[in-house]
Structures are given as C-alpha cells and as structure tokens.
Length: 342
Image (cartoon, rainbow, N blue to C red; front, side):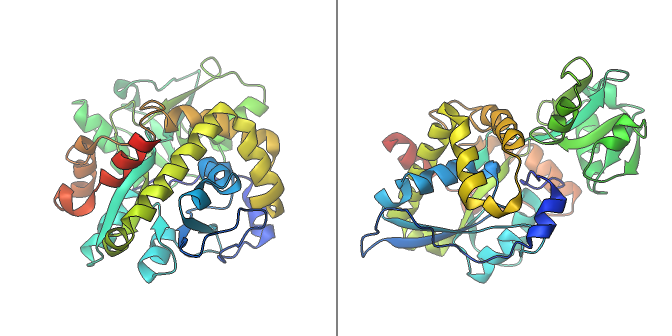
C-alpha cells in the first residue's frame, strides 16, 4: 500500500521525544487475574489519538475484564515496523497495510486478518477551489503532489476503473500541504484526518476554499488498519482474542460518545511526552470517528471481504503480488462473536 495507517502529529516534536519501542506496564489499571493472557499490540505510529479506542479500553479496564493483560509497543521514526515486530514474536497484534501484509504471507508467515479499524480509509486527495478534484474525471491532466512513487498506483487504478486516460503528472513532496498552497500541484495526497486541519487553522473553509476527497469515494476501495495476528496465536488463544476485540469495540463506542476522553488520555498519559496539541488531537478524533464507524455502531472493526477480490486484488496485481484464498488470510469469526456479545 502507498498509505500507512498512521496519521502523524508534529514530526519535529516526535523526533525530539526520541520514542523507543518498549512496551509499557501502565499504572492505575485493575488488577489482573492469575490466568490473564498478556497481549501486546504493536502500533504503526506514536501514541496519539489515532488509537483512541485502545486507550479507552485500556484505561477503563475493558481488556482486564476480558482476561487480557493488554500491553503496547508505540511506533514512530525510531521504532521497528509493527508487522516486523509481530512476525519476530515481540508483539501479538499489529495493523499492517495491505501490500506489506501480502509480502509477509508470501514469505511463509501464517498471518490472519481479524478485522479492520477503519471502515473507510482516511487516504484522501486534497485540492483547492481553483481546481477541485471531486470525481475521477477531475484527475485527468492534473499534477499531483505525492509522497511515494507508489501513489501512482492509486491514480492509475481510479482512472482505469473509470475508463479514463492515464494522463497526469506527479511531483514528489513532503508531509506538509504547503506546496499545494504555493501552486506546485493541483492535488495533494493526504490523510483526511490530518493535513486538512492545517488548512482549517489557517482560516480556510472546507468545501469552499479546499476540498477533501477520499480515495475510497473515487473508487480506490482498499481497507486499512487491519487487525492481524499469527494463526497459531488465534488457534491457541481464541477466547482471549475474542475478548480483546470485545474490549476494543467498547473503547471505540465510548470514543464516539465522547471524543474528548481519548484526547485527555493520550495528551496526559500515553503520549504525554510527545508535545501533542490537544486541539489538533480533538479535531483529528472528530474527523476519524465517521470513517471508523462508517459501517454503523454495531459493525465496528468489520469490513466487506468482497473488497479483497475487488480493488485490493487489482492493487496486488499491479505490484506483482498474488492474493491467497480468502480463507487463508481472513477470519472474521472471532469479530462476529465479539460483536454479538457487545
């Protein structure tokens, strides 16, 4: 995949903090029963509000109530990739992107997808009022500011599915949308939960001065934020895995009811050393909630497996990878059980 499931706050603050990859044993949680199973989650980015449901489940003791001693490994520029950490055995749960997941499976790792944090991917296209990009036809002939050469796969997929010519230009750029404002391109690859906030802080008005168009709405329907474990772990600890998912669902439901709770938890506790901006974190949380709950409050973490044989297979083919049989890489049974009990 060309977008990770990571939505980055102030990168300078992150680098200054020197985040490592040690798991934390957090104070203030309920005491664990002797039979509680330690489950370590490796995150793809630093401890911010992106993982709101997890923080709430941890803080409120939802994991502990399910017999899970929940720990976590923060990600970031100084941390190993979450999928590498999972494969190496240092974590039990990770959220890799689609193509890295397929690559790991192709190398012989027996991994299984249990669900997905994002019902709709936050990967988006940012454009300005002088040339709004709202439909596939608007992309033809455009100049795109991209953060990775692989972003071309997204454009190609959208244009091809729409029966449009592959006529466009790409320009390498960084994480800031400033080049778009400077007129260096017509569209900027962004996260719908992040860079648009920068423009809002500048006084620009969404859907008037700038437009945020999800790639999902343009036809690039690739699920993100997978919840992945080793099949051996699932088979050995299925009841605790179901409990882990139940706790996570409760955490995300609470987050939708009160977006400020996770902001307080992450800025004052789990990410207290990162210099996170509470106002930015609250806005990010407000923007991510509709995408996480796009399937409805009773289908959190669920995704349509038909997408695997659709766009997700198309993307895999473009990158030269094959997709194994669905039964070998996806098992939504534990999630179904957790949802019915929630």
